[in-house]
Length: 387
Ligand SMILES: Cc1ncc(C[n+]2csc(CCOP(=O)(O)OP(=O)(O)O)c2C)c(N)n1
Ligand SMILES: [Mg+2]
Image (tube, rainbow, N blue to C red; front, side, top):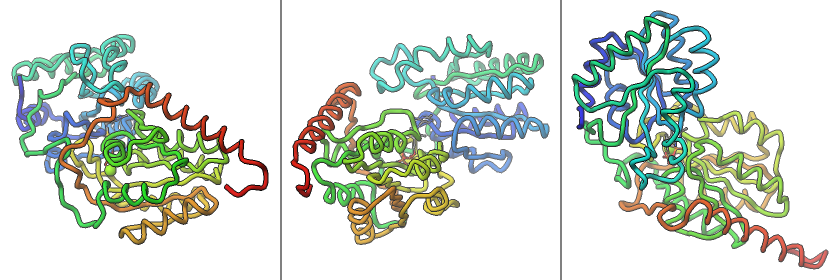
């Protein structure tokens, strides 16, 4: 059964929920859009699920009823404030959790499999009561009554929502949609420029979502490690490779939403200072892979953060000439480099999924083999010979 997001929001408002925070999931594309346009609801687009919950706690301390919406992958980011803040202080919240990788959806992406199979068990373990959304207004009302009973005992409540159970009433289209924004470069055209400048031996770690899928479409190679899930951790993985292999040039291909989720890593990278590291952020000012919800990069200067965190060189690019120059510089001079490239939100209509061609484990093996083979060849070059 499918419920319209408008009805769901109406029922929440009837029960006096008036504060909303969360991190998008494609299953909630319409919900995030409607909430952001709703004058009766204060909505905060959080950088991570843990901070979404903490905003909601703040609102609850100030006497506002709050909802936190997240994908079940975000349970990993929420467990610390859920246990040590919400539960310890008895500040109950309503959690709307989109369940990916449910055991009866074996075709879902592999990164969701383990959390999908364990979402119920995790909530049970934490003694958080939950209910599966049935897609009907009556069912949702009954769930809100159960939530109310839990709140009376100062306990949070989770509603588990499955793919397709909330309508996309405002016409948000996911998966290869065309959207228009002002910047001249698309992710695809930016990646073409980056790919042209790479040497065959250069290693690339790409972030989860459409950026990895575009890279895969344009230039699949064993030297690419495509992240699946683990949103926000691409640059740390890439910098780890760079620090462990100082003779190799390593590029992180990141997104604005991903960087914002774990921005502290920029400080660590500035501190660890890998010389052979180029961090490229394709900033489309949104969570485009999950429906184009606005990210807070619109009001932040990520490149200024990178300067403050100690990156050796930082550039901001908008045009292809600027990007081409900055990538060439970033790959030929000492890093760590940070390159913020403003891009529009358009993508090719059909973006292949990396996982329909390589399992994550196959991707890992190919990357390691490429890395080790090249390391062997590089070592085999006699001393004093230019590489
Ligand atoms: C912890 C976690 N929360 C939410 C998601 C859902 N998700 C997948 S891709 C994505 C958007 C990432 O945005 P950005 O890094 O800006 O890349 P873009 O999609 O715009 O290219 C989100 C929110 C996730 N995978 N993991
Ligand atoms: Mg983005």
